Image (cartoon, rainbow, N blue to C red; front, side):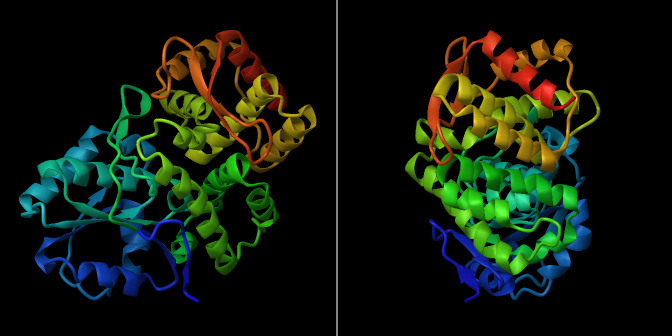
Length: 357
């Protein structure tokens, strides 16, 4: 069987990318199909879709790679390309790339001419299990992650693990963090299969099935709560503090990959889960040691705690003056809307700091 079942019919996990994409392209005029990609993908990933029927004469725009290019000027570049090439509301935008690219391309397609259809083809593990699924689009602004954006679902997401042959081990492990998160918030069984996966010698056929189950977890939360008013907040586990790690690193000129930041955020938020939701201490310590063994030690200083906290206060999930967290009472269980004060957040950062010495 070449396709794997996922919660939503609009998400296809497949080994037959060209066939699935070809079916979609057939619904649109050939002169109304546009490709948005990034420099690295243009070199390594576009050749995998070049010969798709209906894609013979596609026009493309190539965005510079890297998180530092997830900004308004990149969106403007896509808008200008679409406008100058006759895109209209009957057009299709195909976003081919990692999470940065699918966020940008999805936002551009969602906003130009009040919205046109778009398809995401994620090429990194992070994008496949997280960024391209769920409808969150946008870009970084004023030093804050994803500060500007809209929620708008893609027509289709096509996931093919062959693209993962084009990424390095750090980017592979970055995506692995979101799979860990899905297990922690929803399924001890899924966490166990993720933990048992051989990271040193990845089997992409085995991974295809694990990705499908991981995406199904995310998509089930999205289906229940598309606009993140309630249970979809579960997906933010690790991200409130993780985004602070990521933003601070980006601002310092020494960016870290999103999945690494989320892993560090999960460690700190596991500590909060222990303090607020009674996650057993033994579970906290065992999971923290495991995450450190994969993502390494990231040095932070006590003098940075205030900066981290201020970044957290800008988090979109906050209501009022206290920082809003998603925490876990146990593996596979979730507690949303957990407000923590500044002193407790500093304790969590100190717990992480001690682990990273």
